[in-house]
Length: 151
Image (cartoon, rainbow, N blue to C red):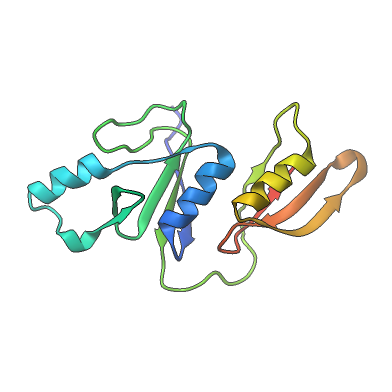
């Protein structure tokens, strides 16, 4: 039986980075507000563990996104499929990522359209790579400098 997983990405602003990646991947930002309300009411967490972003309660320093077609828990909002979790850390990114995402354009779309859309969301181009028959893509950075490829 295959194991469940999520990719955890360190950040300095989890909510903002989750917004970027949700838009880039056309995922949904998870909404843990119902769970947070239950935990607050039961005294399991205090208000200092909570923040508000775009009118919803979130756990301070954390935000997650999930594929819109994957199952999720309706109480917690936590996805049970393809999922990215962003967690705030005190230090800034240093050096090259050891792991990165590749975003592929729609079958009918072009690389130029994909790159322009990602730039409109806040990504920046780093360098173009053209390996001829082996592929053509752009190395890009998200708003916090994490590298990814657009192909």
